[in-house]
Image (cartoon, rainbow, N blue to C red):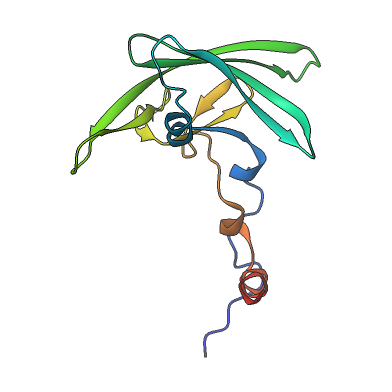
Length: 145
């Protein structure tokens, strides 16, 4: 019988996806937010209180610009404006599926994450899912519930 060793889980020091704000282009499309020239904001809330807001503007050239502020390392608020290209893939039964083009690697991504001044895909920001860093007995316990 092969027994996993203690600490055999993946490194827990990496930042987790669940700790970052994200923008999902599938959700934006469902909500009708990808109309050319449209502006608005995405709001995150917790316990009924708004705790983060990102403004967006959809360009006429298949782009979306996110505008927000974050608290810098020096304790001052920094304004950020990041423009991302939107690409499309044709669907087998008709229609088109939108994707963000990651500004750092250029690959398609359904979700981009906001990490201070950076807006990028999970891979470029070196983010992992919480489940990827848990120990085998923690996973077994979670799966048993």
